Amino acid sequence: MTDFLAAAVQLTSTSKPDINFSAAEEQIELASRRGAEIIGLPENFAFMGEDDERLELSSSIAEKCSRFLITMARRYQVALLGGGYPVPFGDGQRTLNRAELYGRDGQLLARYDKIHLFDVDLPEGNTYRESSTIVSGENVPPVVDVPGLCKVGLSICYDVRFPELYRHLIEKGAELLMIPAAFTAFTGKDHWQVLLQARAIENTSYVLAPAQTGLHYERRHSHGHSMIIDPWGTVLADAGVTQGAAIAPVDTSHVARIREQMPCLKHRKPALF
Image (cartoon, rainbow, N blue to C red):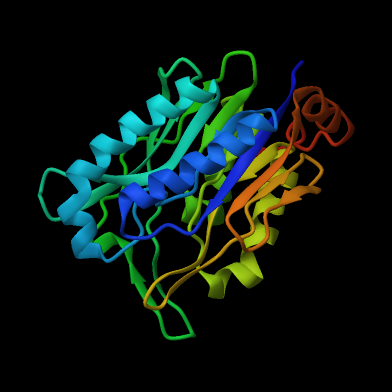
């Protein structure tokens, strides 16, 4: 059983990758100084801008992201999640949205390409069509044993609305669900926290949710509130709406205790559904 500190970084990323990397490193350094051993960066941590510019820059962004994550993990001796960045797709017209988790030695532990794409017309007037510029990933989200810490399941943003995905991660042994996001301000105010708590409660697992916050460009405004939530659904840390990080302890023995006290995972009747 392991007890360690985790950090969910919160950023206001822009269309300037170098500025974004500097902001991310600042928060990684601060979190590591406070003792965090696993750190998550939000979706779009390296670039948050218009679709055409993202496609044009995707090759260079992807290369820089991999180098950045490896360097940061080694420099600060942390397990580090890059919560989502553009990777060129073969048709030259779209990208993948990829999250990668690295160990403290800079070795790649897990990779996940976002499978659920945000195609939504919101009542406040904004329309989102991720599928027009992003390709859905083809592989199920991975669960990986982070050495010395815990078993982590990966997902990205809109995935949080699909509970069956998290059942898969739990069945594969996940104790900590990482949900990096760039949740819109409009949906976030009503849905973000309740969805995260639901995923924690129904799966009796920790949730680490790094988030984007504030105004990025034009009308693109993110909700913020990076959170760490325990298996009972208690919000242990909330980063609010400014750049920073939510930092809290993760205790795998607490996961075991809650699963013993509330054994709903054992009581499932999957054969009936």
